[in-house]
Amino acid sequence: MVGIVLVSHSAGLAAETVALARSIAGADVPLAAAGGTADGGVGTSLDLVERAIRAADQGDGVLLIADLGSSVLTARLVTEPGRIVLADVPFVEGTIAAAVTAGAGAPLEQVLAAADEARGFRKLAD
Image: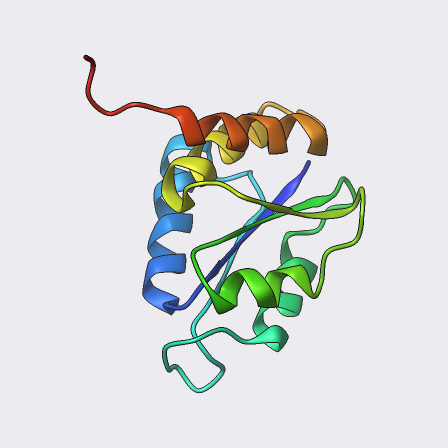
């Protein structure tokens, strides 16, 4: 199953988004949070991101979803084409779409596509 790693400036934001995704997509989806710095501060940590990737990786690829700024830059450092991919998607909506698709057993390309579709989700109808 494709793993999903949430890279955020906030440990709390990453952890709560993982909890929300698990409640919707199921507990079997390999989700991991990499939020904040190693000392619990606001920021991102390459070590935490690498640790989260190892935790989420089941051999079918890992999708990284970052919140903003330096988290995107940190996530880009660990991408590996075709194996560890960074999605350019809304943090919460993209995570939910990716987690549901991963939970259905879809390959990495489809999980990325599902997350990418979240960019167009409208919250209000015209």
